[in-house]
Length: 240
Ligand code: FPP
Image 1 (cartoon, rainbow, N blue to C red):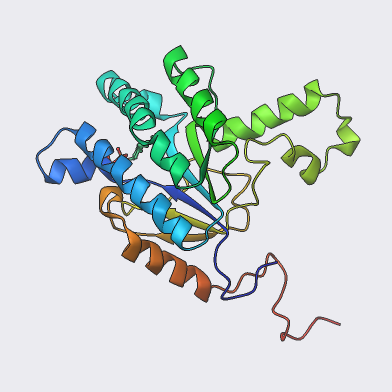
Image 2: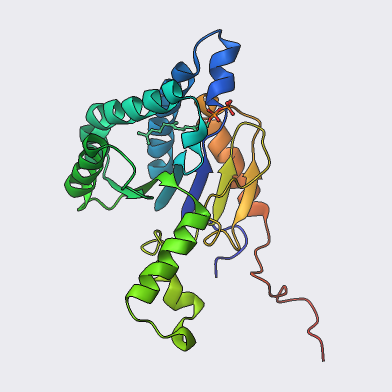
C-alpha cells in the first residue's frame, strides 16, 4: 500500500476540453483534437521524466460513436496519422504502447496500426502508455465475465482477483491518480472496476493546454491525500 506522499505509479487521464479549446479559437472541433494529440505527447514525456510507470488515457469511449459522423471519422483519421507520425518517437522515448478496448468495431486499417504499434514497442519499459480506445468501463466488466465463463471458471471460484485477470487492464496496477481536464466532474464510464480506490483530481484546464505545470499540480494534490483503502490511519484508535 503506497504511503502518503508517495508518487503515483499509474496515472489515468480523461483528456476533456478539446472541442471547447477549438471553439474559443473559432476553429472546427477537429483542431482541438489535433492539439490534444500534441498535448498527449508532451504529457507522455513529462510522465517519463517523473518516473510514472503507467499512463492510461481515454482516447475514444464506447459512447463517442454518438458524435457527429464527421467528428468520429476525423478522430479515426487523426489517430491513424498520429500513429504514423509519433510511433518512432514513442519507441525512442522507451514507451510501450497498449491498446485497451473493443477492437472489433474499428477499421481494419486502424486495427493493423494498433497491432503494429504494440508489436514494435513491446520491448520498451520506461512507460506503458495504455490507450483506451472504443473502451467503456461497463464493457470491460462484461467482457471479463464472458471470458471467465468461456474459460470455465466455476462461479464459486470467481473472486475479485480471479475476475481481474480477465479485465483489459490486468497487466497494470490499479491507477493511483485519475485526472480529468476540462472542468467536468464525472467518471464517464472510464476504468470503473480499476478506480475503486483511485484518487481523483479535476482540473478546469482544457486538455490541449494541459502541460507539466498542471501535471505537477495534480501530482502534488495526490501526494497530500491520505490513502486508507477502506482502513484507518495507523495512529487512529482501533475499536475494541
Ligand atoms: C474529449 O474532448 C476528447 C476526446 C473525445 C478525444 C480525445 C482524443 C485525443 C486527444 C487524441 C488521442 C490520440 C491518440 C493517438 C491516442 P471533447 O471533444 O469532449 O471536448 P469538449 O468537452 O470541449 O467538447
